[in-house]
Image 1 (cartoon, rainbow, N blue to C red):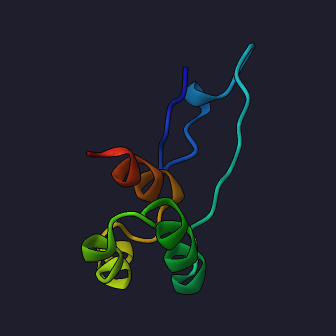
Image 2 (cartoon, helix red, strand yellow; image 1 turned 45 degrees about the vertical axis):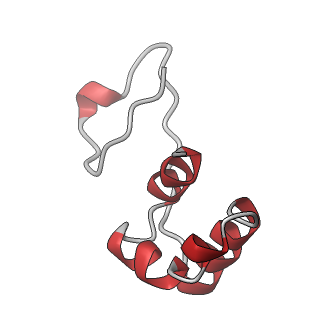
Length: 69
């Protein structure tokens, strides 16, 4: 199970739970990632910077968006 959160609540820590902190991507890193996963969708690829910004450069949000048909 994967749980994402912006806060570091003690309830999210504990036995059997592993905390992995993931920072936000930079604009260049986000663009590079989206261009790689959307290489067959040029109409979307052209909007990578705007899309990345709208998603707050959050890696999980970028990955989830790229899975959409």
